[in-house]
Length: 332
Image 1 (spheres, rainbow, N blue to C red):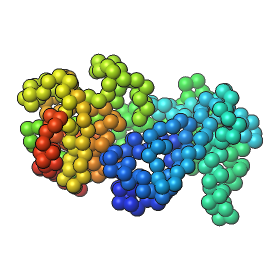
Image 2: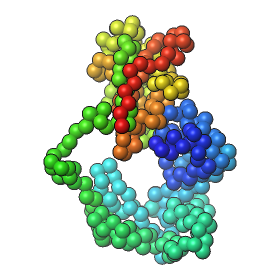
Image 3: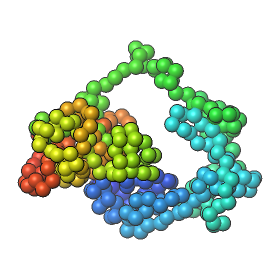
Image 4: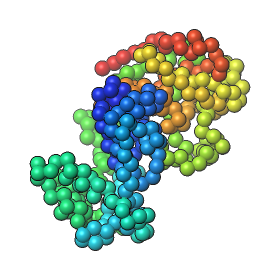
């Protein structure tokens, strides 16, 4: 979030992304994309194209790299990398497919070459030695973080991999009272916005079953029986009746604009079993409604599960849409 704020303020001169889709993943989509185009240099190291490649800085480079399914041969032979799944389990991965082109470099090779070109004689790291055999990189990881990566070059080959230490998984709570502690939004968020008006809602952003991060594989969500589209706003039937909204009617969802920034997304109202005065929409389509400053205090994670929005019928007078929210509560 600090990066988002710096980009919006024009304080970032260059951005290098090792994978990822920063523009699409970050909040305040409209303002961020506009500011992103003013960055002097953007570089994307990638296996596939995404929106961060077509919304770019004044000067931009795309550096294609080897994908994980492709064979990665370095000086010592075919290399293995480690990956971590959603459960914190780390295991080895070796590519077997022929590279898409002989000129493709691996991510470690690209990072090493950038370091060599940037640091030159100031560097104390033998980058070529590391790239020649990735196990040497992992040895240094184990030396730096022994509690997590001890003997990782051996453990990574175990069937199913090895779980890195996650105390919460075994119900170990490293807190003062040795219990799991829950925080209220007022204590947790940098800024908490209270819902007050009759057409104001708490928005929850969510993902479909056919999605991984910002990558959307299809438009059918079997979790919620939504088919053919993601441009929907899930809303309680009582709220729809109260606002006199018909099923599938287009609505304007307006985010907090107390800072003078307009945030608006057009969606189709869809009845769903959700608490009254709450609504839900998909990520990353609803990122445009999340102010960049609206995040958790410590982790800086965008507060995509509690976003105050206003819902009005499409075509509503712009003066109403532009009206400022009331009752913003700040903490911290």
